[in-house]
Length: 274
Image (cartoon, rainbow, N blue to C red; front, side):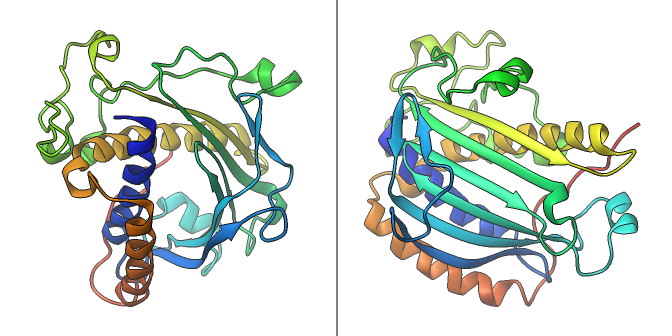
């Protein structure tokens, strides 16, 4: 899809995923969804990618309630009521910054920072996030192929397989499953999401294992979510950002009701192995 189409598709898919992940006490609670600029909800430090500053966009504050979805070892280690992850996100598309913390329990000992930049290419840009020093030295580049990469068994559904599902409205066939990634060079339009993920988990005896575990879960979520974005095109193709903001308001009210009732929904976080 185009970069502009992805902006709508990503927001629509986040709203849909939030509904699918909310119920029975767990799920997504939306606290704030408002514009930001150099006066309101100012990001710090300033947001910059691909040599450009991004100074305005949409700010969201969400709380993810994970009491029943957290791995069993986390439930044993963490006190009751501590399984709440706060997400602060500044979306200045095509760039965004998301910060995840656990202020009720781990405080400064835990964070995940995800910076994203979206470009109409197949991944050729080098260091688009402008990493320097230690960050650049420790960077590990991971390519994600939404058509060919193996999907976790718990995440696989035929209706979310872009090699099986195309878009009638956008007149796009399913992606070829060729195990080579050559489809990226032949499909048009095409784009790439460039993401840098920084993880900090300061817990004696568990830090390196947990940081590796979190990174593996982020990769799992990126793969599963972006396969859904592609397969859901017929739901949002032709929508505008105005349509999306209206939808987000409706979903926020729906989530307030849904989190209090029904069964737990959505994917659980995998157990730490080894």
